[in-house]
Length: 267
Image (cartoon, rainbow, N blue to C red; front, side, top):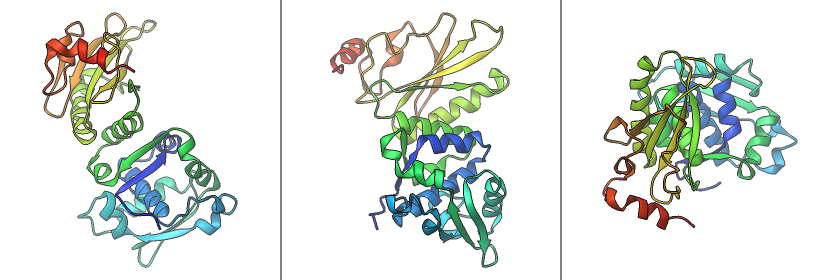
């Protein structure tokens, strides 16, 4: 059994599939705990690739909730919701509750076994269960997963959408960005990019800067014309002028030396 360091590596394709399937944040958190539990038992090994039934396992609800929350929920409500949300998705060959709904038994489908066995060979996210437990909304959890999967890239970036009105979405999004910036140790620069074809339509571009990133000078703030740019770190979130280098500085970094520092970090 591998040492439990409170972390789990999950296929990014699998995580993306869970969101696309419409699973709620509490359910995805529990699924991550189940993936971690199976990882600790060595049940993603190659010997189970052709025999998913042999990888069937179980855990008590209290154990799973203890890893990712809600820790104060002593009932089976979260487990029942997980079973209901996933029963018809093809994620499991079998999933059920036993012992008066206190024990969850499951067998992931062969395609999940395949994705998880080969996770190191494709895009993956290294997640900390303590951090996963703190992601209370779908928005924060997805942002955390995207940030973790790209954290070690030279120039980490990803895109997103705006559901509904930006005026209503702005505050909760920037709050989630601050939460995730604190969890992973980064600064977000978020571009609100106007659609060149459809009036009023916008999309999001997220860029991350932290020690170890190697953005080219000027590339960090290069956005299409008309883009509004926001900066979010653990302490603050505000709209900035992308033409001003001082907004790109990390905590403790002299803005006057930023351009030199960016160039010095390049390989």
